[in-house]
Image (cartoon, rainbow, N blue to C red; front, side, top):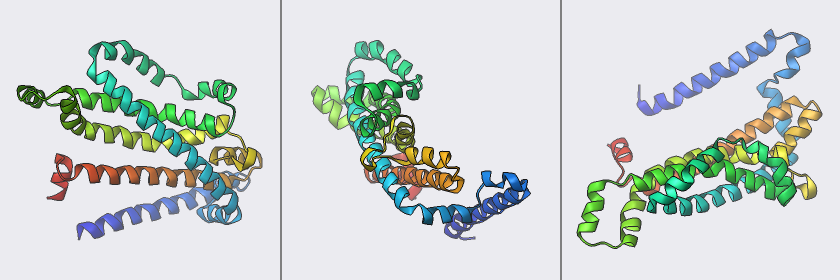
Length: 263
């Protein structure tokens, strides 16, 4: 079978099997419990019925996710550079970064509401905190993992520190950076959803998908709740697809993984 055709048919068959199992489970459930598992058809009906509110909530969640994601990229790159340049700074700060990473971000939600208020600002901060750690950890690891022979070659030719950083260490760290970026891109919509769920606000139509999930849950609109989850999933795919495209543009000409894939 043609590999390209195979890559299309096999996922399509798996998807069809998944939907068939979904319907089978639904109809095997007791009638009074079937509302807990809406069918794909009922979920599509919820999309049509709640399209306007879901579209507005998606835009609000996307805004929070993008702002938090962008802030995490900027701050993590600066901090990773500082951590890589000084082992003293790295040894001093790295344990605290790991400690913060292990702290559930949801704990900060009530504090953030008090500090910056409910709504977009809190959502952005929560998204930032969730995206920040994989970015700074991976980028730092990339910057300090530069081939020692190349570093010595640069120093032998008397390259200054800025040349070593921007012409050697930063390009060498790009695969690590994009690995962290892919993880952060997956987490950004989740972070915005969690932020909206715990610290969001509907003031001025500012509620996002997390806020809509609270409303649908309280109104027992379970198909609409599943539709909200599907939109969040699609949003995550879009974020990751953009990052993968940027990664390909930056690396496919020279990085081994892309070179092998192209052969």
